[in-house]
Amino acid sequence: MVHTYQVTGMTCSSCESKVKSSLLMVENVVNVDVSKDENSATITMDKHIALDKLQKALTEKYQISAQHHSELAEQTKSWLETYKPILLIFFYISLVTLLVQFSNNRFDGMQWMRHFMAGFFLVFSFFKMLNLKGFAESYVMYDVVAKRLPAWAYIYAFTELALGIAFLINFNPLVTNSLTFIVMSISIIGVLQSVLNKKKIQCACLGAVFNLPMSTVTIIEDALMIVMSGWMLLNLI
Image (cartoon, rainbow, N blue to C red; front, side, top):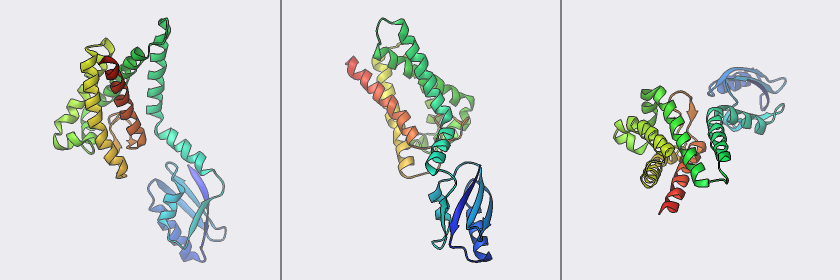
């Protein structure tokens, strides 16, 4: 990916060198070509980098701005590319579970949520199982239980698998939903701490197969399971 930016404040060759060296230090920047005559910087990057991040790399003397592309469009495109795996998973699970409802005379919300949660836990546990050790190493970085008891990272993967099967066969709904509510409520604590503290760590939701950053998407993912299991519990009690 290559973008050309306008850079003001450069007055000499030394300025060109300072701007170039500063921008090259930014993560995911591959190459930089700077011209004081054209007041420009052409940056080659592995993935789109937010404009404010580029500005932070420069001193106040130099101001960088986008002239030939839309920052909002590029950020949206970058976000979609980053979270494409998890978005596709949610799409397929939603689609399949909704199609199941066509066999009913009416839409059964409780059954749909049960099937959705079964698909969620089975698919997510599958990706964790592909590289169980890699998942565990990522999970202990932020989970409040796994930090103190590393074995929990391994147990958690199998817990997700067990919950997926339990939802699929409708095993003791009260126990299954209660366990889900407790496990996911504990899990979201570490996620919230990491996101609020702006820690740049890998999200272990899809194991070590995809390099997904910890973000609000992870919070939404866990919160969705908490809300669904909580709602099902209220309807069971």
